[in-house]
Image (cartoon, rainbow, N blue to C red; front, side, top):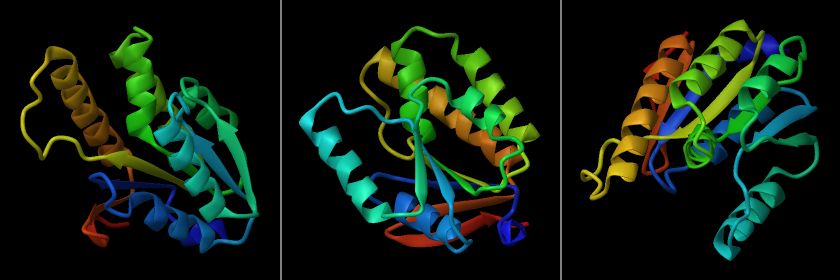
Amino acid sequence: MAHLLPRLTLVLGGARSGKSRFAEGLVTALPPPWVYVATGEAHDLEMTERIALHAARRGPGWATREVPLALPDAVREAADDPRPMLIDCLTLWLSNVMLTGRDIEMECTQLIDALRSAAGPIVAVSNEVGLGIVPDNALARAFRDAQGRLNAAVAAEADHVVLMAAGLPLTLKQP
């Protein structure tokens, strides 16, 4: 059944655009079990509540792996796993990478290599952060630029790319 989803789908969009819900729908169109790869960490009450909402919405059938930094390893380890995988989200992963001082280019290259070798199906969620105003500080500008490069690299590798805007899926690339 996994052949109903392409090997790699990227779902992009702004904050609260419906990215995660749409991505979950793609994955759950296949029979369970599914793998949810979470990259966010609950450092404050708001994030704790967001994570709880996502988990409650997913319900049963999901095996959750929390990998705030080891995303390339998690994708490589699941290379032969036939279960559909949802990565939510690349933006939080990249933020974690940057904030720990890791080599961004090397980490992103390792992720692209892992995605390239994975059998899939994988649905990855990421924020489109380059459509707003120019950030007012160097760290935020560096993050915006790195996220743009990562999104472009994943989109180039992906078979299917969807941009969510106002809750509506806009297909940018299809298999």
